[in-house]
Length: 172
Image (cartoon, rainbow, N blue to C red; front, side):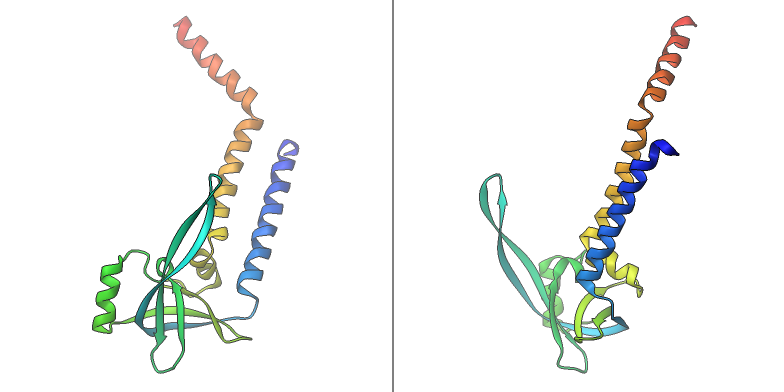
C-alpha cells in the first residue's frame, strides 16, 4: 500500500477540488421541486469566442426558455441540459404546440434562482451529474488516471509476467 500513497494523495486532492467547485457553483442551500410542469416558449443563441490553435473562433450555444406553469418565472437553460436527445426542429414543434414537460427543478433557497434541471433524478448527486461537466468527467478521469498509475507503478511485474509467458511459449 505504501507504493500507492502518492496516487491516493492525488485522488484525495482531486476529490476535494471537485467538491469545492460544486459547492461554489451550486451553493449549499438547495431545494428541489419534483415533477414541475414547464412550457418551452423560445429558442435563443448565445455567441462567445474560444481560442483554438492561436485563433479566436466564434461559438454559438443553443438556449431554451422555459416558463414554469402557474407562475411568471422563466429561465434560459442550455438545450443539452433540458433536451439532450432532441434536435432544434422538434423543440420548435414543441413551442408551436405548447407542449408541457415535467422536470425536477433545483432552486437556490436563498436567492430563489433556478440552478439546475434534471429529467430523472431528484437528488443533489443527479443535479451535479447532469449540470456539471467537472463532476461528470472529473470522476471518469480520476478512475482512468488510477488505472494508468497502477499499471505504471507495477510495470516491472507486468513486464516480467509478459516475458515469462513468451519464454513458456518458445520452450513448448
